Image 1 (cartoon, one colour):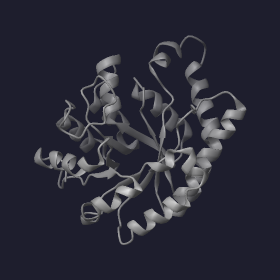
Image 2 (cartoon, rainbow, N blue to C red):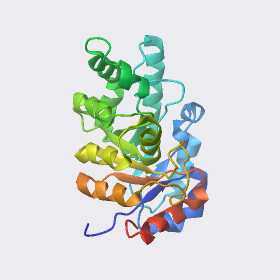
Image 3 (cartoon, rainbow, N blue to C red):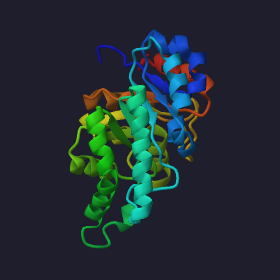
Image 4 (cartoon, helix red, strand yellow):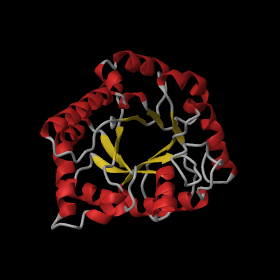
Length: 271
């Protein structure tokens, strides 16, 4: 790697001022999490205005965390699907107003699927079709806006499941996200591949990474260095992807994002 990758963070609008110098110094990647909440999506303009003011003069890559609470992308209930599509539309409205180029969405796959999707004929194809039926309008809108939606592993145990969705969609507006903590949990508890394999499997389709640490027992979102994720393997896999994903520290304690990146810098992996 000729130059160490620059790592950014997920920060709330209200936390931007605390990390302004750090964020602006290298125009680090930024992800705003509040727009995943339905109450904020109903009236996002105050948060959008705060973000625009705080980011005046910053030239980094901006993303938001899209909605996910209370629904699955493969829902078969048409009324629920309409609500999901409306939430996605609201979030894309936010991307348009903010000038955000990326939006995180959640994968609907889980360990039950690993053991049961093959019970019936074309069960996996049916799941993919249901997901894309829900996401169809959002994909079309994202294409028009130049926004990339990135599907994050949540309870996934097989990276191939999300890849199959991205390949079936065949759209530059849908790519993959890897959350290191989620992958480490799936590896430790469910026997899924190791974290670096989630990343290397994504390859050129990798658009986004959530960097968080954990012991593998639960979804800890600890600061980097507090758990046992093998960061050298993670960044070696990133180097081999030949992609330029948004690299986002996503931890519970926003005050420790700079410390987390400093940990990677001390390891000689990032800046």
